[in-house]
Amino acid sequence: MARKASVKAAAKKPKPSKKVNMSFKVENIVASANLMVELDLYNIAMEVENVEYEPEQFPGAIMRLKDIGTTLLLFKNGKVICSGAKSEEQIARSIKRAVELLDDFIV
Image (tube, rainbow, N blue to C red; front, side, top):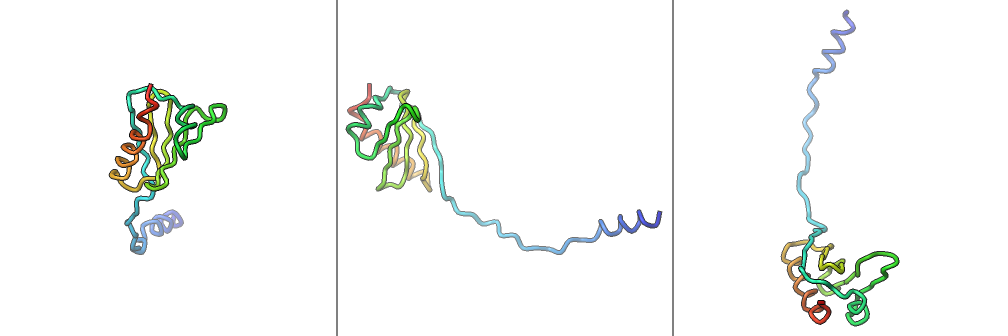
């Protein structure tokens, strides 16, 4: 019985206080949007710079907006996934730029 008491006493020892750094930095925001239109991915890939489309590998086209620093996945049904942004403003600029580039390819 004395052994149980010593185990309980050891378990109740207070842990030393440690300073924990709770700061963080936003590195990558992923956002989704629905343009509510149908996209012609084949022609987008043929005509728009920095767009890759290999439907055998992946059903979406990959648009790289190098000047903004984001990558967008474009799907035929008009859905868009934007990644690589560090702010909501950067996401808004990316989607706006994509719509400008895609305007001629909306079915």
